[in-house]
Length: 118
Image 1 (cartoon, helix red, strand yellow):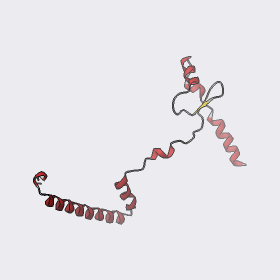
Image 2 (cartoon, helix red, strand yellow):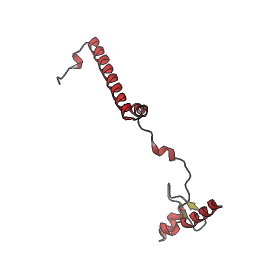
Image 3 (cartoon, rainbow, N blue to C red):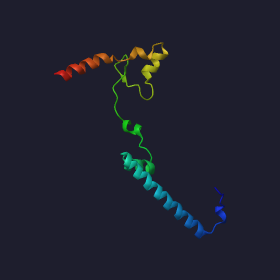
Image 4 (cartoon, rainbow, N blue to C red):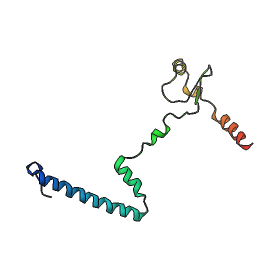
């Protein structure tokens, strides 16, 4: 492809070039949409992604409550998200492990299973 010096072109020529590129891109987009429709793909979603980008899947979980994963000696709980609570940091400093504070999930699952059967 020949190298074109855009700076040396006149304004009218540049505007015509811009219009030609826009029409060519529009024609190509129409062809792609037609091909996607023939494949059975929802081209409206593809068009939205091309224009606005993909949705952030992580944002749907932001702010959701999570069941407690750890229980401290005083009954305080922590889900394992965010900063480590002071009670756990102090206990780890004293030589304990995170696993020592895990809440037994099998008992909770058994309780839920019994409730559902009623």
